[in-house]
Amino acid sequence: MRSPWTAMWALCACFFMIMLDSTIVTVAIPTMLTDLHANLNEVVWVNSVYLLANTVPLLITGRLGDRFGPKRVLIAGLVAFTAASTWSGFSTTAGELIAARTLQGLGAALMTPQTLSFITRLFPPEKRGVPISVWGAVAGVATLAGPVFGGLLVENVGWQWIFLINIPIGVVSLVIAAVALPNWQPRRTLRFDPAGTLLCAAGLLFLVFGVQNGQHYHWGAVAGPVTIVHILVVGVVLLAAFVYRQVTVRAREPLVPNELFRNPTFTYANLAHAALGFAMTGMFLPLVLYLQTVLGLTALASSVLALPMAVTAALASGISGAVWHRIGARNLIIAGFATLAAAVGMLVYQAAPDTDPATLIPGLAVAGLGIGFVFSPLTTVATSGMPPSLAGAASGVYNTARQVGGVLGSAATGLVLQLGVAFAVPDAARQYAERLPVRYREEFVQRITEAANTPSQFDTSRPPVPSDLDPDTAEIVRRIVTEVFHNGFTVAAKASLMLPIAVLLLGIVAATGIRTQVRDRVP
Image (cartoon, rainbow, N blue to C red; front, side, top):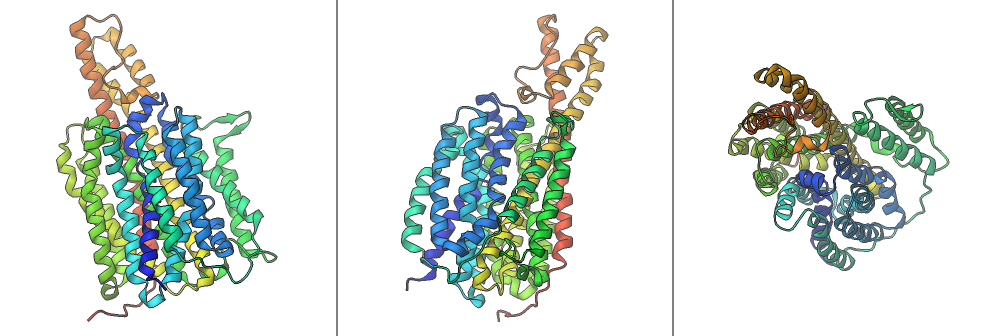
């Protein structure tokens, strides 16, 4: 039998591509806003719909691996993912790109649970520490490297290549998976729960749609008498019904077997994983837009700033895999959450319209350390002792937790950012209007307020100014408008970054429930 590490590297190649695409779009948002003639809400959905499509089916795709064999399901996902990447790269409208990203997310959903499921089958429990550390390092580095690769591609060949680059990677990964992965077949036939699947999918869809589009519909009617509040309530009710069905279903096997949660550590690890997914996804949107919109960095320059975070995350993942036996997984996870929260807080403190971008590097590097210290030990404690028969289900649940956190992080942070811009920019306009002659103040504030709710909020090269100004006065007004947008957007970005900090504190609370003994000490 070939070494399990041969198959392990094939899994890492697949997982790296999946995680890379969860953040690679973020750095291209300002460019896509212009090229696709889209608004912020539409482009945020380009990222959110990928996370949503990658999240909703994870429970069922995890069980599909248990039913048809993880290799078959992973290869099917690779084919769908690569085809959708091609479609995404050739999209010409925001709607078409959203549809392509949906298919891409579905392909990723087929692959994701199989990667962790394979590890539990390839390695016995006492030898899973190192491969899980590698798996965690791949997840952390790929997520943080997304903006770096995205910036390089956007700057040099265009935003379309953040998707087209997946074609050669997907083809090579497909060949490696076909050759290197063992073709395990299930020993028994599973009876799926289609009603539970529909409840879960519909509940998540309604909930995230409501959070994401609340500001877009002004928290009012969406279609006829249906409002955003109605959609949110329906989403919560459907998810509650899903949980009830998972506990009570008897005729068919539930998507989430009750055996998984008999160990409280698995429950708390999933809550902590959701908090990490929320924070990692949520912090990128306001940070990247602040760097490019306010500080004026190019896509490439802003992505390079994320490079120290990727490097320190990789280093911390390797270190954590070696030392968690000595100091305890729970202690390391809590320290990682606290470090990440402190790093984001440092970035919030430093953010200003005239901040030197280089001064943000230490905070970003510290954030990478926090992420790296959480990923590996958290995955280890969540999967330790998991029987092979539940490997697919456990992997599906664990990855769903992170993805649900990521979806809500993207939607909620985008919502806070939109709300912040809608309030902070007009507020700054009212303050700066005092510098103008009285007859221009009302029109100035009105134009700024209108622009704050449109894609032009990102185009300070053509600021809205009264049309009847003489050239000298118009130039002064343009400078004032730029200052207004920069100050208002900075306030909005800082406010939206407070949300990931709050969720990281909740992650610390969840991590305190993890119960693992400090054993297998390395002499």
